[in-house]
Image (cartoon, rainbow, N blue to C red):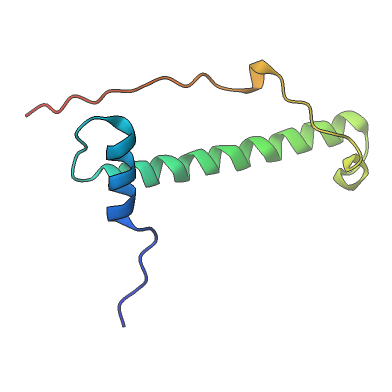
Length: 89
């Protein structure tokens, strides 16, 4: 039995091509998936660090901080920029 695919490659390519108004390379779907996986990994790492620092600052466990609402400021959001890759061939 063949393994199930992690994501629909053709659908992802069509969506990216429709929204970017540019030609997309053959493996753009793989690059997008890897970038997404790295983003999630970074997000989890930052969440763990934030939870640990908040718990240690309060002098309590993480269960005691569940009543606090998270505050997100402008400095917490990274700037997004458009990246253009040039094909060397």
